[in-house]
Image (cartoon, rainbow, N blue to C red; front, side):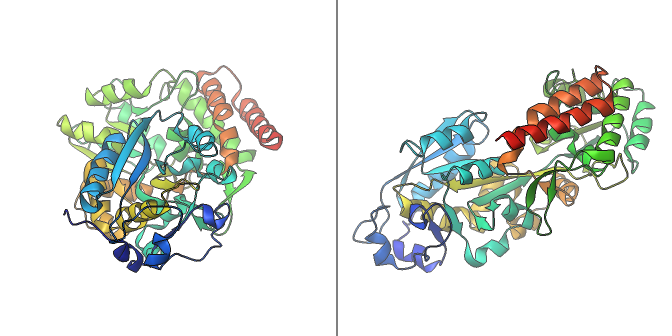
Length: 424
């Protein structure tokens, strides 16, 4: 498709983006629907003939930069708008966005997981997006990931979560509980029973979270509408029960903080374990290596549903972009379409954010992750989340290695997190 898209087409779609004009992203401005009015705006760019013109700058980290470059080339071919894709380090891209936007050095769009959204909103650097009826075409989890205080701030393109991956050549049936699974896997005589990646200094609360939630100890309490509050919810009896479970798994050798992500992946590829808790980023490599695998929900360890975090990948606008018209065209009339969402899946391999697109894919691996994520919860995007990770991971290391009594160490961790939140 090479025909350039006109402004009239963009306006007719009825989907709009509100950037700096909405005064801090409160969504209070009227949607822009008139082509001439948009052309006369101080932002964006268009020729008198109605064709789009100008350049967009998009930031993406090393895990998404190739995908963004490919899809941006399609946008350029379709509209004539040049897109400069700038690679940023995944560890810094969110904070760099916060510092760059006020100085006028930020990109027009940032591509990222949704968990930085709360910080971007509170720092006033991200604009809102009005999806109109198109919002109903996204899965609830995907839409929730780009929503903060009732406002939509981005266009989701994929969701992802971890699950239990089984090597079908080693075992063909999986028990319903974690204890039964470990007992079964131990009996297979492989090097490891089940692999859960860890870090010697920071554990891995993300990969342990389904097990934690199965004890009824989510990180933050949620309101009736599913939005997160700042109330820490992983203390009390449920949290202590999970901590004692971690200690027992560490003592039994099931969990080992020296089993890093690379060690776990290579061990599973070598057939040294029948099970691994991991995400779609590893399963493609397993399949390419010729392994026969199934993707299943993580079994419960504490009796309740195991709820993994659901990460939402999205495109988010700079609230102060000088190219609002182009940003609008790219986000709401290009990214938020089934054709482009399908292309993004083909390029990135993640479950599409649009329900119709996801359901139309005949892929047992994706279906497995969909099933495992059906009970999942969005990764909290509230600013308080930044106070959690360091204390959380350090406590889990101490408990798994037996360096501290489980209940006491977990309770201290909760107190430290609460103090850090109160101090911010």
